[in-house]
Image (cartoon, rainbow, N blue to C red; front, top):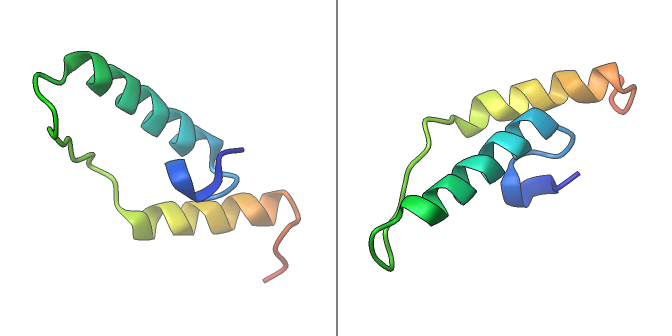
Length: 61
């Protein structure tokens, strides 16, 4: 589990996607300081993480 550095906690699918995107970009970047924006919405990731926590019984509401 990577936590907030690569996405929200317990959302391993999102964390994996971000890590793979970062590694791909590391190989593809053409110059220092280049930035790639991913089509991810933090609000959606948080909603998905809440559902994951419920399924893991880490959240009761």
